[in-house]
Length: 234
Ligand code: 5RP
Image 1 (tube, rainbow, N blue to C red):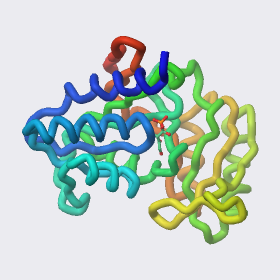
Image 2 (image 1 turned 90 degrees about the vertical axis):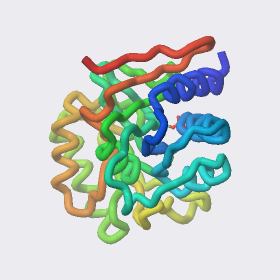
Image 3 (image 1 turned 135 degrees about the horizontal axis):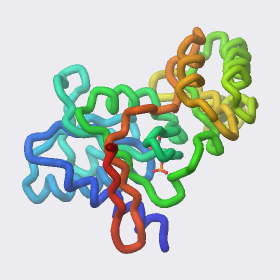
Image 4 (image 1 turned 90 degrees about the horizontal axis):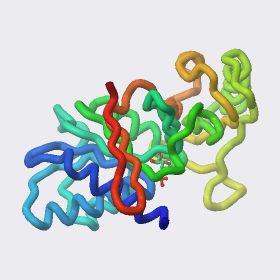
């Protein structure tokens, strides 16, 4: 099975949740990009929607795909937001942020009436943590912040505690987010208590946002070769 076919099937299934007149959060990453392109096709066929992009990359993609956009400062309601994930646990808790867009993704997902996660079958996991957890931090004092993150990983029982600065396209420089911050990737390996870790990270000055998206997703769509498996939160 091609991973792309599975991602496209997930994105196509998510389109069924979009109705005329909706304001739609547009996620970031390769799976969300399929959704944006397919939504653009529907717009060309006459569907009226407004998109709220979660990254500058998605903004460019949506503009190219012909999805009309609305400035987030003018939005009063986001009906549905569709985004990818790096890991999805059985309770629909997620790790997100491999693409570095986690802050805007979380703001948009939290504002949406309905948050839909799309991915292929590499995304579901029994326990979060094998995928390094992205944490957006301020450049000021990031070494001290990394130390506090290390402590938070230990105190909340994570198996790993390695915290690394994400490099940019030029290895000598850090990756810079759309918000002018940097990303620390925490190799927790296994996160036994995601809520405790999320709370501990939120208490650290310098942490802007982390990639644990807990109790937010209502629908998870896993694309397969021929179709997509749709799961709704009970
Ligand atoms: C970007 C994200 C992405 O949604 C996540 O990394 C999944 O990406 P992909 O669909 O390419 O596997 O959180 O910040």
